[in-house]
Image (cartoon, rainbow, N blue to C red; front, side, top):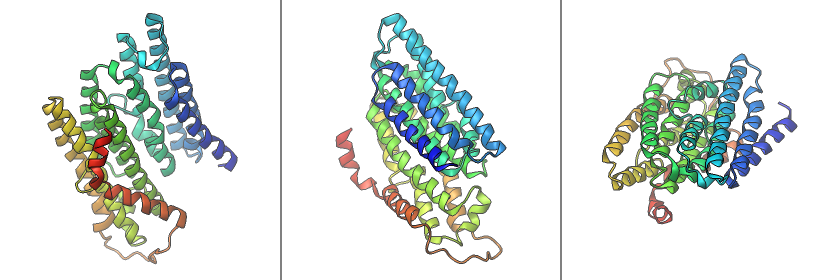
Length: 346
């Protein structure tokens, strides 16, 4: 891909995200989302592989539909109330339309079908952007409008997302599809708590971004795309695979790693809101995710292939990536002790 085109796409991504998260007006928020959609399309389709082109078309159609629904929701709200302010969403139909639009943007069930397919057709770095940066603007809109939305609908979508993300991830062999279903499951955790404690949703998103970035960058360095190649990557980069195991277990939410922190807080908050049944269901559903993360960790570090692979151990890998991955891995594994300090900010 032309370096100038890549630079323009990257700057447009930053610009679109900044416009959406800093706007009060619906039209500006919609503009930021459209800039984001148009900026990521060249990055998905840059390999010119038929699967990448298919992923691009699917992504464009879904995002265009979601953006149209969001604009229609804001216009019908302005028609009924005379308000274009994002926080003044009060019209019931507009609230329902907005919930649908944001669910499509985030890949929540039942609008999740596009997400695993698009990730499978993208490169690792583009898949990382789709899983983290491009989900920040819709999460921000959800944050600003959370007081107006239907709690029962959001809780139902969240629980089904956590269930489906766990179930569908069990049978996958492609790493990007497994991480896509992991993302759907995590979006369920963020959505269920947004009405009761929006700050906790943002904290969960930040920690999810941190852990997902660690996993994607590590897999990008080892050039692993499916479980069978994951088995032999251990012989090339043993230290990197050992840290990958920590990142995967943190993403699964095992104590004493960082990933346990948001799940602990969310279950605690749900219990305070007298939603003990929802908290129990979410905790049980996280076991499904734990199973496939453990499987990934098992393949990456414990399984040795039956035949010897003629590879020298790469003790010296790409310096720029390795320093970033090591910093991210440290944060992914070691943030739990500062949870009392984080609690004071919520």
